[in-house]
Structures are given as C-alpha cells and as structure tokens.
Length: 280
Figure 1: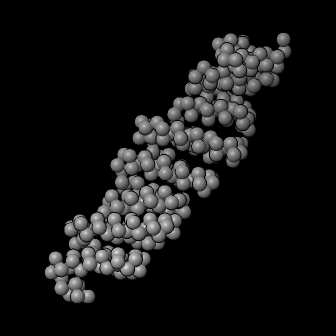
Figure 2 (figure 1 turned 135 degrees about the vertical axis):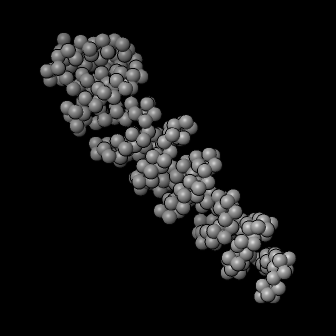
Figure 3 (figure 1 turned 135 degrees about the horizontal axis):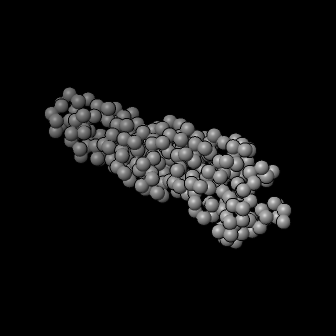
C-alpha cells in the first residue's frame, strides 16, 4: 500500500472520529523521517491529536510542519485551533494578526470567535483583559465599522460588570476619540458620566452629540439637571460651569422648560445667599 493510500485511510479515520486507529497507523508511518511525505504525516498526526483533545502535543506537530514548510496554512490553522482550545487567546491573537497566510475574511471569522470565547470565559478575561484590550485596540480597523462597535461594547460591559469605572471611562473615551462608536456606545458614555457625577462633562458631551435625537437629549438633560441640583456638594463645586453650559443651550428646551430650569439656578443662588449671581 502506498504512503498516499495510507494517508487517505488516516483522513477517513479522522473524519469518522476513529482517532486511536489513525494515530496507530501514523506512528508506524512516522518511523521513516526521510520519507518525502513526512511533513504530511506530521500534519495528519497534528489533526489526529487535535481530535483527541491533546492540544499541546498537536501544536508541537503543527509547529514541526511549519519548521519544514513555513507557508503551510493548514499547520498554521491547526496551531490556532490548539491555542483556542487551550484558552491562550492573547497568543492566538498575536499569531493571527502577524500571519500573512490567512486571508482577511478567514481572519475576521477566527477573530470574532476568539473574542466571543474570551469574554464568555470570566476567569480567563480577569487574567488577560489588559493584553487582550491592547491587541484589539491595535487591530480594531481590521473589522467593519459595525463590528468594531460590537467588540468595543464587550470590553466596556466587562469593565462595567467588574465596577472598574476608570477603565470603563478610558475605553469609552478611546472609542469616541477613534470614531469607534454608535448610538449605544454614546449612551453608555453618558450613563457612565451620570454614575460618576461628572455632570459638566456629561452636558458638554450630550450637547455635541449627533447620534442621539433631540427628544432623547431633552429627556437626559432634564434628568441630569435635576440630579445636579439635588446633589448640593456637587452643585457647589460645579455651578459656574454648569450654569454656563445651560445658558448656552437654553434654547434647546421648550419655553416652559427653559423657565423651570432657570428657576432651579435662581433658587440655588438664593439658598446660598449669592445675591449678585441671583440678580445676574
């Protein structure tokens, strides 16, 4: 029986899940390292071990194939599968983004799977989030616009759920600065600023925002202004900035609402006995 015939039998074994039989046959074939088909035998051994969930061993065989033939795309894909199953997502992303054998469509598909698996694995995400975030940000333009926003939202949600508001704010600012944004990301940023009591930043962001419609803006603005004046300590720190932004954008509101908001400012100055500011 020829070597090619034996390889066909191995592939058939693997397709049918008969990995033990495939491995036994391959071990006999691997004895002859001078065989012209040696790299293909190693490749099939990698596939067989991958099917047996022996990922570390499988990766070694795939790497041996690449050592003999650096452009073997099947060996490289095998390594990626091993890294994916070994939960070595950071290594996988680095390998993938530096590889020139796999086309953009395939890379995108693998990347999406990797990122989804990473954030589904809470323990792993806790260990590697900083490295993962760095690689994702460096390669974000690899994705289409809608997918970029979807991926960034996973990072934002991770930080929110883990109550890391500084990191949450950092990735949101990065997202907006690099135009990786949609209406939901804009709203996430506004919600964060509200949680952090950063009302001045919030008002500035909201008034400059072009993705949120006027009706939503009005609703958010009313909530923000009410919260601001209910928080006496915060109002004392920021009243001048807040008043300036409100006055600059007062025409945004309907006439009755304008008067209501102005009365809040007047009442604040009256209660704090700042008659000059009250008169002004």
